[in-house]
Structure formats: C-alpha cells, structure tokens
Length: 233
Image 1 (cartoon, rainbow, N blue to C red):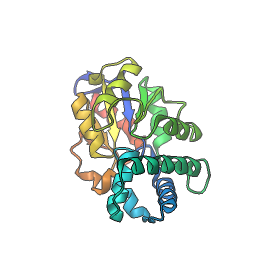
Image 2: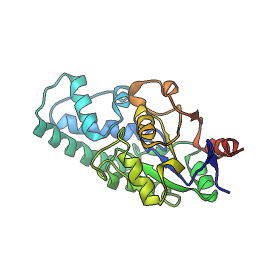
Image 3: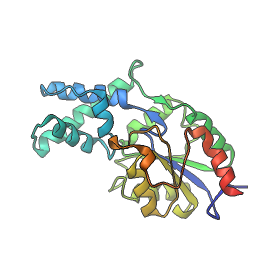
C-alpha cells in the first residue's frame, strides 16, 4: 500500500539537490572563485558562498558581485556565469572537491523506491550537471526524473518545475511530496499544492532552515520512510 499524507495517497516524492541530497558547497566555492579570479576578483570564503546558494547560477553570480561590491553589465555577468559553470563542472569531475551525498540519502531513496513511490529531483542547477552528479554518486538507480533550472521557463520558487516533474512521473501534484532545505522549496511546493518536508542541514540562503514553514522535519533522509509510515496511520 502506498503511503498517505493528510488523507491523500502519495505517488511521488520530489527532492531538491544542493543542500538536500548532496553537499556541493566546496565545489561551488572553488568553481566560483576560479571564475572570479579570471576577472581579478575575489576570492570569496566558503562560508559566504554557502549563504548565496539557492535560485540557480545566475543569482549566485549576482550575489557574488554584490558581496564584492562590483558592478558588471548583463553581458559580463552572462560570460562570468558560463565560466563559473565550466570551472564547476571541471571541479566536480575531480575527487578532492567533488560533491558528496549526505548521510542517509542513499538509504532513504532506496527505501522509498521499495515502497513503490516514484522519485524525482527538482533543482535550479542545470539539468546536465545534476544528472552527471547523480549518476556519478550512484543515486540515479532510484530516480526516474530530473528537472533542472534549464528544463522549464521558470525556476523554483515558481511551482512550474514541480508541476513538470509530477507530469513526467504520471501523477498530480496533490499526490506528491516535496523534500528540500530552503524557502524556495517551500514556496514552490505551496504554490503547486504539495506538502513539503525539510531537512535542517541545508543552505537556505544563509537563514536557519529550522525556521522554514514546512509540514515536517527529518534530520536525515533515512528517516523519511518512517515519517511517511507514521503519517499513513
């Protein structure tokens, strides 16, 4: 029997990537600082970059320039974004700074898959990069759909990416659950008409994730199946 939430059967679970499934701040910091160095800018410490993560690469570049007090026109920002993405991909292809799955992520995905739930990742990161990370870390064996920041016209906190993911999984948003670490995930889920569960260890643009107005918390994704079992009773 599929789990239920607030009386509705759950068919799918959608996950954010950065700060929820994967810890990527080290690689993001390295890639960003390499791109900035080409413009004789920076570097920015990892603690500051951690506070900038969320809403995708273009916003990361805008926030980095703002933090550095540097004015740059739209074309310059677009070029800097492309250099950042190039460096970031190269860093992620290595070993020292590459992303790591959070403890419990693999176990949680495997258990949810065994329950018969369809799983998707909805991220503001470019889809190609997200797919590469998930494949390299062995998580794609449980994930059916990956929606990236370049997969839709709009990104989270807009609900469109969640709606696209649900359609690809063959279900309605009302039968889905969003799992994330930031206000973007919460706002997108609310707008899509989906419940949302949050983790406390993510980025949330520098704000305490424990303050997010979500429906429930799990300290680790390994505990998510138990939470769903309790909600079903």
